[in-house]
Structures are given as C-alpha cells and as structure tokens.
Image 1 (tube, helix red, strand yellow):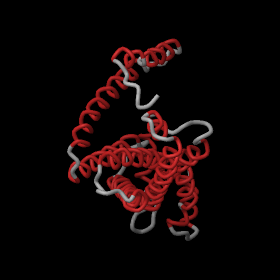
Image 2 (image 1 turned 120 degrees about the vertical axis):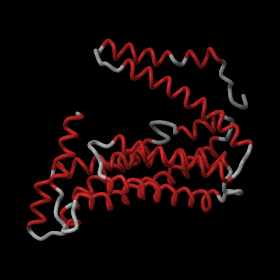
Image 3 (image 1 turned 135 degrees about the vertical axis):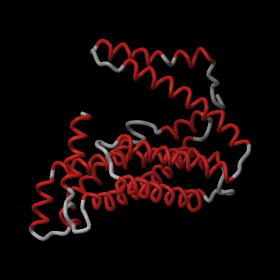
Length: 273
C-alpha cells in the first residue's frame, strides 16, 4: 500500500474518544481538570486546522518573507511561553536573557542545519524549513523552560550557600557554579533521554510521519538522526547561553546577591503552588 490513508470526518471524530477517557478518569479521581482538558482539546483542534490551511497557502506560494515570518512567530510564541511557565515573577533582565539565549541558539542551529546539513536550495523552502524549525523551537523551548525553573529554584534553595561563598571572597560565577551546572543538567536531561530511547522505546514523530507518507524507512531514519542532532545542538546552545547569562541577574553590580528580589520571587512561587 502506497501513500497516506485519508481520514474521514467520522474517523477523526472517533479519536476524540481518548479525550473523553481522560475526562472520565480525572472526574473519577476528583481532579478538577475537566474544563481545562476540554479547552485544551478544542484549542489544539482549532489551532491545527488554522495552521494547516496557512501552511497550504505558504507551501503553494514559497517566498522568503513568508518563511521568515512564520519562524519569527514560532520563536516569539516560544519565548512568551517560557516566560509564562516560569515559577515566580521574572525580572526584565531575566526575560531579556531568555529571549537572547533562545533567539541565538535556535537561529544558529537552524541556519547551520539548513545551509550545511540539508544544503537546501532555495534556503527558504517552507516545506522543509517550517517543520524543522517547529521541532527545533519546540524542544529548545522545553529545555530553556526547565533551565529557568531549575535556576530559580536553585538560587532560592541554596541562597545561604551562595551568600556564604560570597562572604569568603568567591565571585558570583564561582558561588553560583553548582546551581548553574545543575540547571543545565536538568534542562538537557529530557533531550538526552529521548536520544537513548529513540528507535527502541518509541518511534519519533518525524520518522513516523515520513513512513506513513510512503517514504523509505531508511531515508526516514537518516532524516530523523539529522534532525535529532540538530535539536541537541539547539537545546544545548540555548540552555548554556541562558544559564550563563541568567545567573548574573541575581547579583547586583557590586557582586552582591539580590536577596530582596529572590525573596519576592520565592514568595510568589510558594503562593502559586
């Protein structure tokens, strides 16, 4: 059998049974998530339908402006999502670090992947650039979000340790080194775990999609390996840039820990939880 099986409306509707199963489970467990799950399912459906029609137009009218605009929108929404998911109120300096690190890490990795790895001609071909950018941006967003929360929690939980190191003459870089390393490790762990289980525990979405569309499994594997390595590069660059810049926002120009700022952030985090 060649090609992809077209789903009829009733077949697609039948898949929503899984959402109903989830709603029944949370209701039985007394977890007040029914409304949130319903809204998430509706939102996902509407967003994907709109994106589908948008991509049909963009793919049929390939132009560098359209491609760059879509990549910029994805990047902007990912930065906004990371900031919204952070535990506690972020300072302007922290938000700037998030935006700078994600923009730099994602764009460098994406450009390298398109120009060097794929050698795509023309470079703005949306059928390749948009899906690849989506995977790179999405994984980088998850990594930086974990890094942000881990860094904030580390500075909160190890405040006394950092203060003690500063009192003994350590620089902010030395005082926060363990926290920075822990934040980087926590942010990279999901990506590393994905690499470990890929191919044995699960088949990745990109590879599965290509196989379903009739592409040779070998070709699909080659693309999946390449894109996974691109994701690793993007996540690692984005996260290392963030943690190296982000920890500095907790110190003032005199290399003193901003205790009042941290206490406010910690209070907001505890209140939110």
